[in-house]
Length: 219
View 1 (cartoon, rainbow, N blue to C red):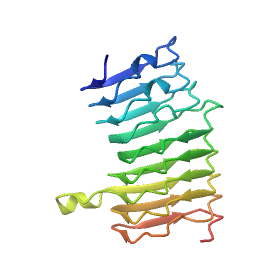
View 2: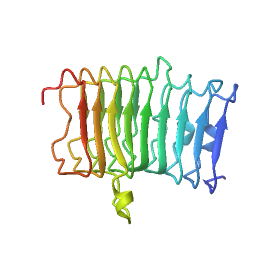
View 3: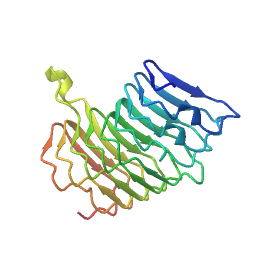
View 4: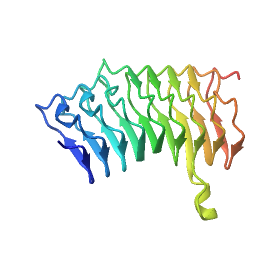
């Protein structure tokens, strides 16, 4: 029984593959997990229910039949980029991965049918956090997130992080109640429905803050 992959796993444009059930005993992938392609009719990730860690990147890219990633119910860590990009099936309206505690980068961009996301267990993003251009997104839960960006060895590297929430026109609520440290810059741009930035315990920012064209912001 296959339980681990030391290198990469890429599945791309497999037009007859609708599920990943043959992978359900895999617990660790040392390299990247890459699932992408318009011609890939994958509807869910239930075959990855045993996956606990990805050492490299986890990329879910342009899967137009995908309706849920909730099958990744054991995932706790992603060493590099955690990416969900341009997945626009009309049934792909919510994401819940509360087991995930740390990622290298967080990218959730251009998923135009999402209305809510739950990453309530996520505590650490080592570098960039990007929540960008999700047209219908109304609610985002990052209630355990404490730190974005790491203190690195040289002064030149310390201030390289970015916390970006931008062009989510229907975002009403983002829960960042435990976020205390951002080692980099903050950008909130063109989130027209957002009334509050969600910061309650933020104590440290190492670079600048840009708050631009959030026309409903009142707190």
